[in-house]
Image (cartoon, rainbow, N blue to C red):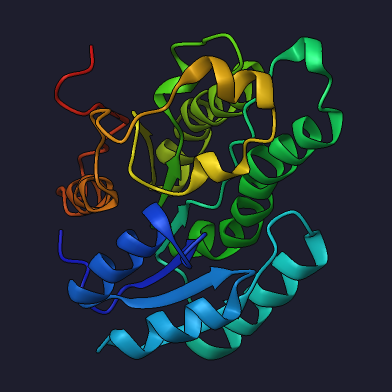
Length: 243
């Protein structure tokens, strides 16, 4: 399936996985909406991309922000063919240390933010009976560990949501849904961690096997470019050297 000239919205496009996905979609000929709260970084990225782009100052944790941005997207392009829900936070904490605000932010961004964006694209995708929604989940939604309770729960929710979306949306509206579940990726997500006890225990190392954000972008392109009768349901991707 060709994706040239498709309109793709990428949340979390200012850095990490979202940025790599946005760059790759643009290189493949998509018209890309770069969505994030970090507008200055989006403008810098926009200047790198040769294909048509739009910057959206979107806070996925705020319903009015998401709704307003999608209104502007409809005004500009009149359609959305691809949605990549990549915005996310990962403030790992031990439950015993009671980081309630961080737990709630994790659910607000990783789960509710995904739902807000899905809510906005569904009317058009239902009408056109076509579309592809990519939800960036995580291996942590499958393999829970101490300190990853809330983050893992948020990503498990995204995986379960993706399954239900395929059940409800694919047969009637021809909307494809893919959950991509990366292992450790070389991004700045761990900068969100404030739990000092956890940081002391984990001993994160630069020598740890990691995927690159571009590896995840490759997975997105793979899922998007399958024939229209093929839905890549899930992709679990780990760096070589990790079981």
